[in-house]
Length: 151
Image 1 (cartoon, rainbow, N blue to C red):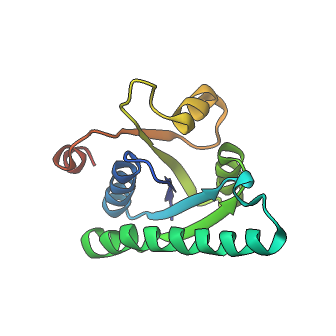
Image 2 (cartoon, rainbow, N blue to C red):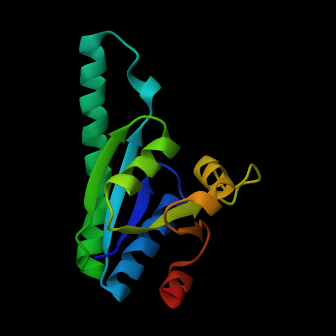
């Protein structure tokens, strides 16, 4: 089964990327893997404090994931899987793609701020020609109706 890999973060455009991935998966008989990446510098504290913070971050990610997962299950009949990795975003995304041969498309949400589409879109689009899978970039301000129309 071909899976769509989508990155879960706190950005507004993440919502449209999630919707797009779920709708495309539903229409093509695919699946969805939701990847959340914890930056390496997030837990540079004493060992005990760092472990508590790591666990709290994982719990927050899981709660955030469940909101999207419920919508995917209820509306698209897609049961997504959650993967949590720690490290720098781009290498962790590439590692996930390499480790899961069923991933066929990377879906990213693009912000519409003046500063640009966002760091992941900027970094990954520069090396798009050498990535092991196609990248779909979903505009962050695309309406729900337009997303339904194009998927």
